[in-house]
Image (tube, rainbow, N blue to C red; front, side, top):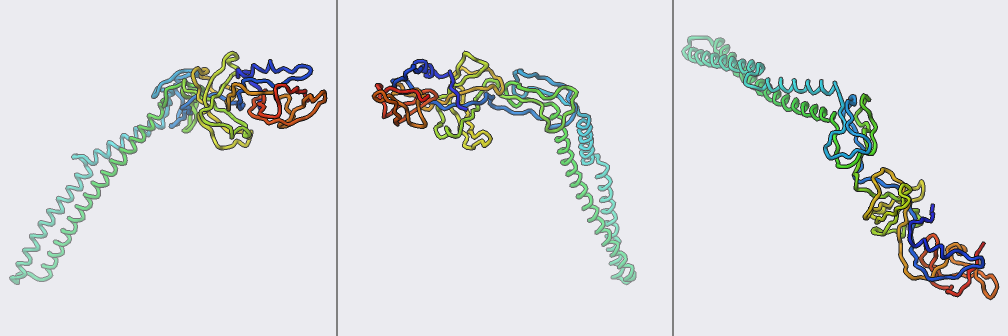
Length: 364
């Protein structure tokens, strides 16, 4: 995975470290220690435009590469079922309102029944009182009095029942008005969902549907994102993960721009290991110039771990194992250990065990 990039200025010094046929010696150089990473460039505020209604795609108002603004109309769906549902909801709402209005035939009939029951009760009350007086004068029988009392009681109960029926009906109609209004609002929202708009200012990267195609709820219509807010999503080998910190400088290069080098900084380090390639995700925000907004643009990067201006170094190709080299000791080839410091893909810092006069011998 680790490949030397030509994008670091310090790597240009490897020409000076080219092995002579009889070996080389440690020398003081500028050493930049970096971690290799690879990845892609993506836009911020990326999201997939999906359909919230079903129908036939009537209009497609965008193409790949178009710049868009927030709330811009992107697609128009034609849905006969949504139109019919909205019309039915509007009719039901109007009917419910009419049933609750001053000229409501339902309430008018129930109010008439209440008035009739009230009149009947008044008559039966008068009749009952008359029979009580007659009975007190022994001018009528007890059976006639009881009959009058029963009629009065029935009329009173009937009036109470008619009033309750009127109130229940009025409450039910009010509930019907509220429910039908809710259904109408829902159908209007569903109708608006046939007109798909953008949530962000940005750029269209991909369109998935064309006019005439059937669209279902949840279908993907387009991929959009910020056109100028870009970041690099990098993969770093797990062996290097512990050396990463937010804020570290990142040098990036893309094949699309063979003569350009881009600069970024580590903005976020994700702690979850990708077991597929044994790497960790790292995000880097561009600083200064950035590439054009090509979605998924492939980049290679060096994340700068340390920069040493003047340190004793040897070419990494002379190192045997982890910390040994072959040297010329009084004309004899001898393997010795040295104390290793920082390193990049080409150079290793010598912190002890070797000097500028030490003659290194190739291990080939």
